[in-house]
Length: 251
Image (cartoon, rainbow, N blue to C red; front, side, top):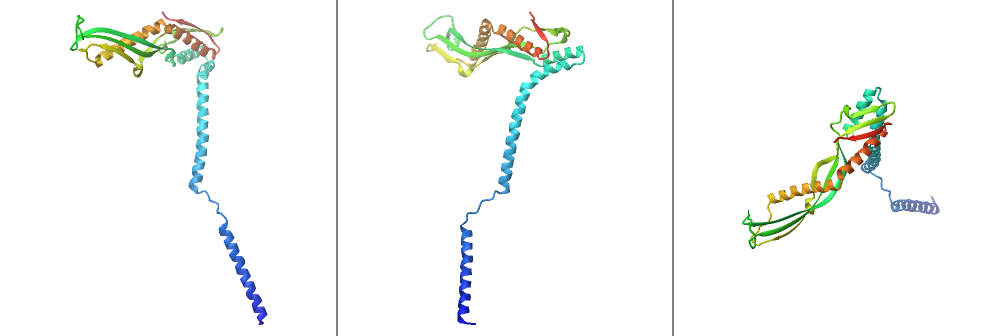
């Protein structure tokens, strides 16, 4: 073999080695794309599925809240007999239980002036024994109609004329008055010999305030408002079944 041929072959081998080295370096320079692991794929799939399910449940719940009260009375039309229709009406009304239709918010003032010495009430205004107490007590009371005792005797239906007459109890205060103790304001001017109010006196003030709240709400006409609102609510409910309702309140 001639020197010329040997030199040419060595030159080709060198060029081939350089080319391979260039390709390897270029591959190392290229950034590798991160592949999502199975854990992340599973997490993203579950998150997407949960969002769709959660949204579906919200929409389903909203639809149920809107449809069910209307559907209950509308389905009464499907009663096969007059007796079944009347019984269905009564059951729907009874399911309302205590129908709250009005609520009053008010503040009452409880004022006391007395004389005590060492915790004992005295009838003499001795120096240092007098106390003037003013308590501002906010609260509320709810009013409505108790429909839990309604029977078929309370309801008269004219199937031909599509009219109904329902006798219900008069409106009343439901659950008693509620006092917002965290908003109570106490103003007191007491003599040197007077101590602080005790728990027993606190309960007395609370009971007095509850009675005053009920009196205040009565004077504001809350019970009359409750009856008007209850009448409108019941008439609207019966209208879904295609009946015109007349309400009579018991004395």
